[in-house]
Image (cartoon, rainbow, N blue to C red; front, side):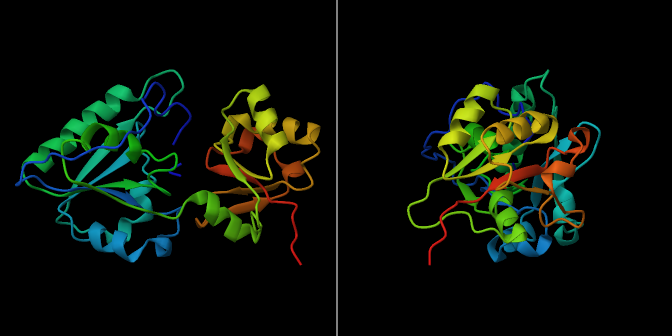
Amino acid sequence: MTEMIENIGQGESAPTPHAPRPTPAAGRLYGLGIGPGDPELLTLKAHRILTTVPVIAYPTMESGKVLARAIVASFIQPTQIEIPMPLPFSVERSSQPYYDKASETIAQHLIAGRDVAVLCEGEPMLYGSFMYIFNRLAGRFHTEVVPGISSTFASAAMLGAPLTYRNDVLSIMPATLDEATLRDRLAAADAAIIIKLGRHFAKVRTILAELDLLSRALYIERATMPNQQIRPIATLDPAEVPYWALILIPSQTQPQ
């Protein structure tokens, strides 16, 4: 999760394997999965790296709002260098030049021999913002991705909803898909997680009603955060549904 805002990564090429060819003196790049929001869900490895690297980078909104840093703020040391990475979070503008600029700033620290940890909400390789830094820098520097707990699976835990049994297939799909594609994929899914709700909630709710899935659908926003909310879908005002919300449709299979 991090899970990012709708247009981030639009136009980006798919991730490909990289063979690092770093100079011996270069620093190491870390993609640090910091989990869905509860700082206690940070892994021991992520905590060790977070509290010892000399440089920390993290995405920010152009307004200055920072979610990733806020999650781990109590662990950040005053001696650490911080690199805010402003991103447009807008469907009107491409994020590519922003990632280009952030990557080059990070690269300068790596070239100078300083390790850099890039904070990423949720799991870095599952709709994570770090993937776009990885695509730009992993071929130049030693890179290590530290897995994090995805908000998708944290939500299942918070809802007390087992997702899959036996041979069930789980589908994770963004609400930003067009209506026809989303309907087709939901109709064929054993179990599903619909992420990036925000302004697409009304469309999703209509599709769920058409497919007779509303009785199975569970809603949660800001899973594991202090302002987490679990609410009945029927009571929701589409205008108030945040981006950081998802709908879970657990499997119908109930093993004995």
